[in-house]
Structures are given as C-alpha cells and as structure tokens.
Image (cartoon, rainbow, N blue to C red; front, side):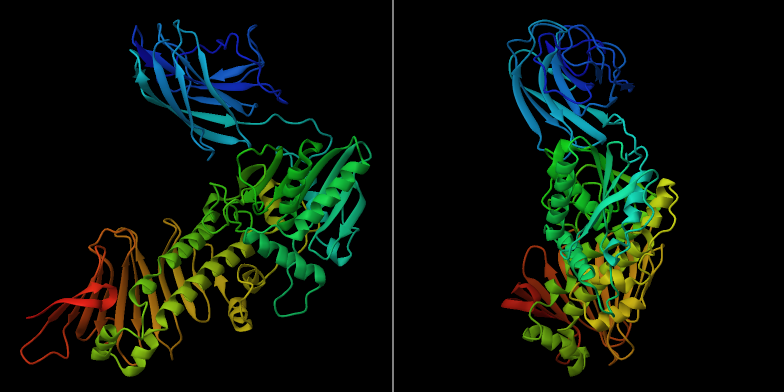
Length: 633
C-alpha cells in the first residue's frame, strides 16, 4: 500500500468532520495528502480552482476548493475568500495500520505544523490532518511532506506543494474605504494633514463632515468623519516634519519622536492616545460602521486602533504606514489593508517578509492587516540599496582587520615600512570612518527614497485618486535624514541638505559619492573624503562576494583592505600595502587573516641585504599572539 499525494475530487468532503469555528465568509480551501500502493498514483498536473458557494449536502462549511483530484487533473493553485485552509490524508486501500508523520509548512512564517496519524481504513475516504487560518490576504505556498514511521504503506510522492490565495470578500459599505476602492480613506487622510496647525476646515470625503477632532502633544492628531447614515471614518494625521534648522512646534517634536520610536520597535504614546480616541468614538456611536485610516504615522495609529477594537472596526485602509511595534503575523486577523509603495522606506519599515527593509526594522514590527504593494516595482531599488548598504556596514571589513590599532606593534611595523608616521596615526581612524560613511550612505538612500516616494500625492497617483489640494511634502533630504539619525549633528544635516539621490541609485554629497547598479541592487563604488584627507573607495565584487576598500593617503601611499564575505577564500581578510598612490609603487607587505585561525605577515621592504621576502606566521589574527614560524627567501 502506498500513500498518494492529492487525489480527492472537488466535490468530496470530510463526512462526519466536526464543524469549524464560525467565519464571516464560509468558503474553505483544502489540500490533499495521500497514500497509495494498491493501484493508481497521484497526478501532479497543474490546474487552478476558485472556491464557489455550492455546498455538498454532507459539508459543515458551504464550500471548499481542492488542490488535487484523485487519478485526474491535479489542482495545485486555489483561491478562496475564507482564511482557513485544511489538509487531508487518503489512500487507495486500507492503511489503518500505518502510522504517518506529516509536516506542513503553511507559507506565512508560522511555525511548521507536525502531526502523527494513522491512515484511512478504506480507499478514497479523506481523513483530516490539520487546518490553518491565515491572518491576511495574499498568496501562500503550502508544502506538505510525509514519512512513514511504521506500517506497510508508503508516500507517492513524499512532498507536494500547493499555492493558496486568500482574497477576503468585499464587505458591503456605503463609503469607499476598502481595499477595492480606497478613495474616501485617502481623502480623509489628506483632510487631516494640517490638523495640528489648526486647519480643521479641509475638504472631507464626499458626503461626509468632520464631527470631532483631537490634537495631542504626544504626537497624535485625528478626526472623526461621518455621513449621518451610520458610517464613520477615523482619520489619523501623519507626523509633521519640521525643518531641522528651524523651530518646531510641540506636535512636530512629539510626532517626530513617535516615528523614531516606531523605527526602533518601541510603541509611542501617540498610538495609545489614538486607540483611546477610537474607543471614545465607538462608545458614542454604538451601531456605526467604523473605518480607520491614516498616512505614515497616522497609518500606524490606524493599525493600533484596528487591533485594539477588533471586530468593532468594519475595515479601513492605510497609506505608507510602517509596521506596528510588538505585532507579529501569527494570530492576527483584520479587514484592514496597508498600501505600501515599492519605493517608500516608511511603508517598507516593517518586519514583514515582503518588506525591502525587514533587515533594518526591529523584529516583531509586522503590519497589522494585509499589505498591498503599489506603484512601480523598479522603485524598490532605493530601499534595497539601503538594506544592502547596511549589510555591508555590518560585515565591518576594518573591524576585523584593525581591531587593535595603533597598539598592534606588528601592524605598526608594516605600516611604517611604506607609510609616513602621520599615515600610521590616521590608520586607526579608518574603521570608524568606514562605518560612519556606510551609515551615511544607508540614511541617504532612505531619505532620498522618502523624498521621492513617501507622500500622500504619490499614493493618490498609485491608486488613481484625485486629491485637491494636497499638503506639500518635505522638499529636502535633511528633513527626512533626521528621522533615521536623530543624533545627527548640525554639520551632518547641513551636508544632507545638499545631498541628492537619483532613482538610478547615484548619491552625491559634499564628502562622498556613490554609484549603484539598480538591476542587481548592489553598490558599484563608494568614494569618501576631501582633498585634504585620506580618500576611501569602497567596491563590492558580487561574483566573488568580496568587499574591498582602497585608501589613498595625502602622503602618497596607499593600501587595499578586502573581506571575504562568503567564506570562499582561505583568508577571511587581506591587506596589501603600497608605497605609491592607487596601488602603485612597491608592494611593501601583505597581511592575511585565515578562516582557520591565526594570521600570516609577508614583508617585502626594509629587509636584510639579500632577502626579498620574509614570512611570519602567528597564532592570532592581525600578526598577534605567538610567532609560530619565520622564513626568508
């Protein structure tokens, strides 16, 4: 007897299966895992299905789509309006004495589920393995793998993969504040854009008027719009970014701080105040249909409101909102949709798996509700470049090569062979300059992307909604730069104010210049420094996965530091020293740090007569520890 994968007909159900928890829309999607060996094998032909409302008489749910059919065309893709999906087990004979260990990956970052069950006692009689409820709409790859722990049956094939697409049904509404039509929510978000400055007369969504509003010095500002027919939109204002070179209002200071806290995974007071505002609205209008919305920080506040009020919130839409601090995907279910432009670094600041900035965002800052990416996918290059620059910064080439400068006597000796004393003193600063420069590059990409793609006007364009008027977005990188680096000095902010970032990834600033390849989302070259200081040129070889930094010193010497980012070389880091600029003149020495431990120093200058090369092997990195061997040639 052999277990088969996926062979149940679309109309077959689980006879006698206990009812599942009640759902708003009862349409299920079922994946079938199977055993075989007495005849027949699973057909893995690709086909798609959509759940319908037709229901077999023995069903406890109105309908379900099926990923495969027995001995016929196999359905591997399924779309449903119900967030629950199930997997079942069947055989083509009696497998009741076979014990099976089945592992299911649901494709949504939840923990893999493992079940141990015996096989069905009769052919073609499905047996429920497990079910799973998804928290947000989207497509998910489901992988089901089976192994036999005892018994005569076997799997055929042992692993099968399906794709489940969860598309929630449209909730009936009298206002356009849904994923399918977000115009009213976008208009409401635009209407509160000047609320903190006393502008409460902005255009409300068509047919609605502002009923109440609140501006708090902890960074929250929001308003309640109603149409008098039982529909309410709670719209929350975005942070009001003040120029870093002027005087800020209390709201500007507190809303700026609130966004910085969110970027660091901290729940700001503004989110708690936003929840209190929504709770007051819900308590006053008991039977109203409540929608929540907001742009940027206001969108994060809308997520907090939807999470806190649960089913009391009918739905809503956010635009360019970062993830919600303290929130993970598992266990959340909401009709809220978060629209995120591909190039928007604020909306992408989340730990969602699809976020370009998941590596930068704090863990546990997923969006609450579904995420829909909008705009031009090519715009994602700038956030990706920011993330990749950050990764290069974390690889810290120089941290590994020069951790002890200037206290390492061996490296000091090597430096003085071809370098001036002034250069040796400056070498200790290289690591800090390198990390600082890459940090500046990361923030420049984030700030440039925000300038280009984080505006309510951009989302209106993405979604085809007409906004008149719109609040002007910040027009200088320095306005955004301070959000990503609150500790930035005035001189750094002045440099940021004159920095430009293009859509093809080129960054030009007073003290550095970067170019990038947006087709590979990798940095090509980076040049740092001024004519009177050392020049740093950083490059990355994606084929060999080696990052390098070439340094030209004003004294006329140079050196190149390389780091093996992928572990493909025998050495983990390597330094070449030259007596001339741009790796010219005499090669005075090399230093290798080995992956296996220890290091090797090779000297080519300052040696006794008749000796052209001296090799010294050490027990520790960077020419330190015990001298293990010394040879000359």
